[in-house]
Image 1 (cartoon, rainbow, N blue to C red):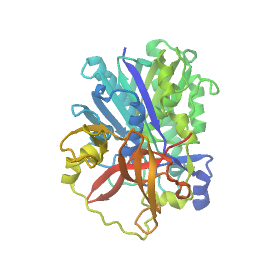
Image 2 (image 1 turned 180 degrees about the horizontal axis):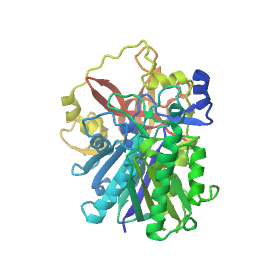
Image 3 (image 1 turned 90 degrees about the horizontal axis):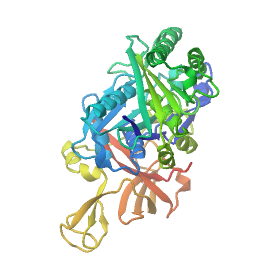
Image 4 (image 1 turned 180 degrees about the vertical axis):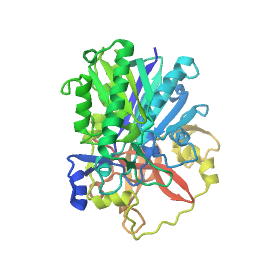
Length: 472
């Protein structure tokens, strides 16, 4: 039976204390903190992070399709799943598709992946979900939204959690929405969207699933339910007959926030990393209707749990965002005095994509050294055209040397320019992100992370930066 083979998650390292928003705007304070994507992150880079985490220890050649779910893709007429597949270094024949425009696009993508595997058109499908939504400044949406990503690998072999049942319905209701030219999510009046949107739809989907398959709340170890906020989340669980203390999965609302299309999937990853063999998990998403699934956890779950940076890891690995002003700057809502002058060329981006996006270096077959970017002449032994391509994005490295540029244009000064030495050989030049400028030392361990560098003429340029090795 088809199900989940592997899972992964990503939460940005920065957290914004919600009291900083209240201090700026007043109104009702909301407890907790929100995960905030760095200025060089977006839904594509976060999907890459979660996808890399999910594929750790798995042969990428096995992936037949990649589906990306998001309501905040940076391009409106360009497939973002193709960029994610390129950055994950998947084979050229992988089927790619974007699932957008709905908060439940991730579970819609999972259902499509299950159908593809069942039909035999794909053996394994990687589903990634990521969002970086903005609520209008001073609103409840701004205080409750957070950024994050999750990924699951769907297949028939080595399944750690089978998907045994599902139920779905649609509902044409104006809950939350954005137009093409909107920066911020729009919402209708709370009482209407909570009662007739969120509550009614989640309850209908779960009760429909239970009636369809003769199930009851006591059959489940965990209930993973989309959340509007903590209080309403618990109210829906009680209405469905679940024990809030023992069965309801943590909503992440006070530690991360509502992560849009990725929200339900991130909670599912949180449940899977704590699940035991034989556990039955209920999953229910929401958005223009609702999807509900029944998962049964198998014996292979322990092996996956040991080798993944899941929700727990990322919750413990964090840095405080110094101020609300930093959040405004990172989102482009508060412009600085600097000026970016960059040149983007689609032809160069296409030509160099194998090393620029897929992060491949050339390993010399004569001397064994790694050249990056790939060359025709080895810089070490001068042999010609004697190379094989190797993926560098997953390799650990140490900081060989660095400099700090406090005058260069950036949203997060200073710019840290680094030269890295990979543990397995090879040298890499990159900027450093997600760092404390006062805690950078020669020889410190670092890892690569996929980020966007700059935009010009509507082209968003992505590349690999480095960051200090995240420690939980």
